[in-house]
Length: 133
Image (cartoon, rainbow, N blue to C red; front, side, top):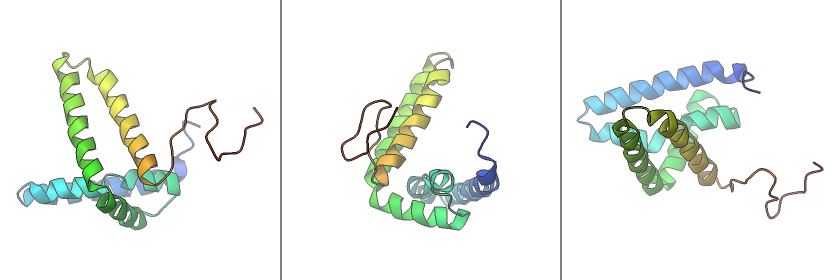
């Protein structure tokens, strides 16, 4: 499962280049537009990978989700910066732990923003069919 993402690689690469360019030009316009761009468009990656969207469709969906959840995105961004700062203050070794934690935090936020409830393996969720395993 680890290396089965080849079919979305080019989409993620193109989306990442566009996201980087958008953030770069947003920050050139006196920082605030760059922050707004980051606040609204961060879930693009998850739409490409999870929903098999094209790049422009992923940005469109990310904009809709970001617009509806801008306050949550703002809190998430501030929390991730503070967590990263804590990892930096721990002689950079803390980044080995804070980086993956922030990744899981953003993925969980994406799942919840699109209306699903993240579950725990082995614990049946209400309304979900029981597994045979």
